Length: 269
View 1: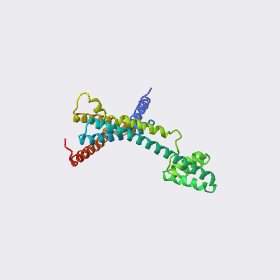
View 2: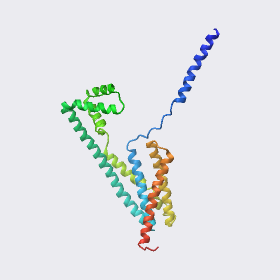
View 3: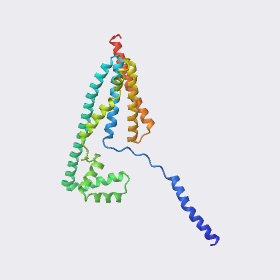
View 4: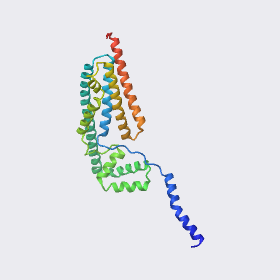
C-alpha cells in the first residue's frame, strides 16, 4: 500500500467523525413538550382557583378574628358551593362549545353539498388561506383539489382554516370535565382548612392555626405551580413563584378587608 492510499484511507476514516461532530454542534436540543393527559387542565386550574378562593376566605375570617369553628363552617360551605358552581360551569361551557361546533359543522357541510355554484369559491378561499400561511400556489391548489374529493376532510378544513373553529370532538365528555373540576376543587380547596382540623387537638391559638393554613396553602400552590409548568412547558421556578405570588396577593387583600371591616364596625376583641 503506497503513501497516497494510506493518506486517502485516513481521511475517509476521519470524515464521518468530522461530519458527526459538525452535526452535533449545529443540532438544536429538542424542547420539552407539554404534559398531555385527559382533563389535566380542569384539575390544575380548578385546583388553583380552589386554593386561592378558600385561603382568601380563611384570611378574611382570620382578619376579622373569628373562631376556628367559623372558619370551618364558612370554609367548607363556601368550598362546596363554589365547587358545584365551578363543575357545573365547566360542564355548561364544554357542552355549549361542543354543540356550537357540531351545529357549525352541519352548516358548513350543507354549504359544500348544496351550494354547487359556490364550491369553486370555497376552494379558492382555502387556496388563498394556504397561500397566506406560506404555501406555494401550486401546492395549495394540489392540496385543495385532493381535499375536494373527500367532503368530510373539506368540511373540517373549511371550518378550521376559514371559520377559525375546530370540528367537534366526539370523544369529549362535558359531564366528565365538570365532575373532575368539582372533585379537584374540593380536594385542593380543602388543603388550607386542614390546619384548623389537624391542629385542633394540640392548640387553641388561632394565629398558629392560621399560619399552618398558610403553609399548607403555599405547599398546595407550589405543587399545582409545578403541574402547570409541566403542562405548558414553562420554567418551573417562574411558574411556582407566579402561583405563590398570586395566592399571597389574594390572601393579603382578603385579610386586610376583613381586618378593616372589623375595625370599621368597631368590633372589640
